[in-house]
Length: 180
Image 1: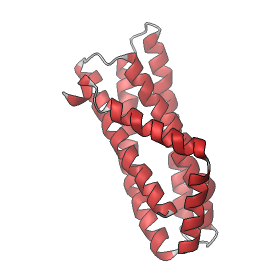
Image 2: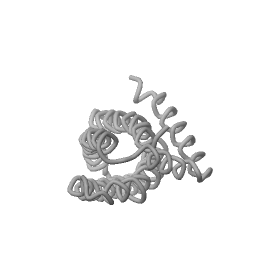
Image 3: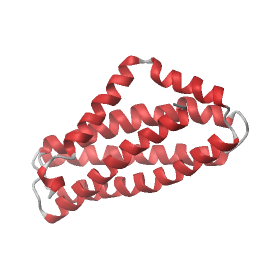
Image 4: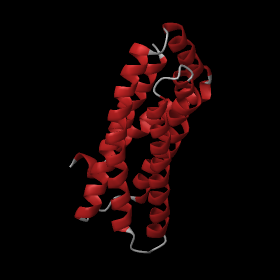
């Protein structure tokens, strides 16, 4: 496997999460009772998988390697801005979820920010996948791809955390509000 293919595999899992988030928002708008534990699990997957693991792989290793060739720097700058935008949306989801749990009626802002996050993910993943195609075809060597991939896989705790997050996504896909 290559670094680019690992990031694409991450995107496959994030795409599953995007569908869960969109369905959750729709169901909240319909008045469906979504357990707080499910909503909290979604926020954990966003924080721990999308941001802490996946975006870190891109920001700390992949983007700097691609940028070192003076290629695609403008696209990278835009992705970094989009990552921060996604973090801001995720913070709003958590903020309004806490208010809702404390008894305030925050269903609508939770649903709104979930919907916004799903739209963000859909758009962002599509752009990054095109970027990966370009970087893979025109910038990165096979040796660089292999070296970055090995670095991704070198921290066993992260590999295990990814497996755990995929299990959480699997579980969320079985929830009654998602399967209806």
